[in-house]
Image 1 (cartoon, rainbow, N blue to C red):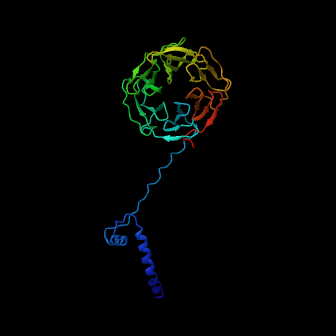
Image 2: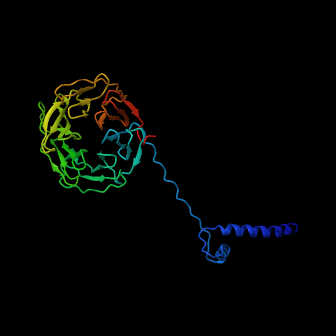
Length: 349
């Protein structure tokens, strides 16, 4: 019974504290008694205490293990996009020093990206290819807000025949998509309305010394690069003496293509830096360049190095800034290919 006097002494203090606390309750109607509101709620047989439970945080995606693969799109000297492992998209506006992940359309299968700025770009979603690329469907989506939304375009004019690859856009309206199969010459589809409708080019001509004969002896065109009215594309073909690389050009918007030059290294992709300067970069002692549109080639002084025994894919955002990727690793040059530094591949850390 000793506790009874203590409780009685504390009762006034407790009531005072309750009144003070209730007077601070938010949302009380003017002139109403907070204590009365609380009391009424406690007397209601249906009243129950509720609390908001925050949803669990969305788990971060697991880091992508290297080696992997990355497709790069560099629309300018500062902006660069990376599609890593074919499933995760990243954007950098400071030449790859920092990256932010951006959304992709939900159904990402055999995706390729092409961007013309830090906000506007396209992605192709290719369907399964039939045997020997007899046919393949392709869907195209476009974003104008940095990947936040990807409205589907429902493109028309692209025939089901052949495999589709090497999506490229040179501005907001003009895009290109290569199509090939192992039994005939390739073509390049072109769009003049942002990817909604497409027109097929004439078949790419055989370069000197190359003969399209089927059974794998055909050309396969890469992404188109534009420099004003000049369009350039690399085409790779298998001959009886091994693989060859050729440069073709178009001066009529991609309707027809003509042979421009041979590439000296059959294993290294050609990167178009300007309309007349092209480079093939592999090792410091084997890299080559032309400054006259392929009329002549000479050794390129570069410190580019890599461990992988395969040629990198290289793209330039302007005449100075370019990127090389092989097996998911990324390097950058800011002086036209002379010096290179390694970047951290987004999504791998």
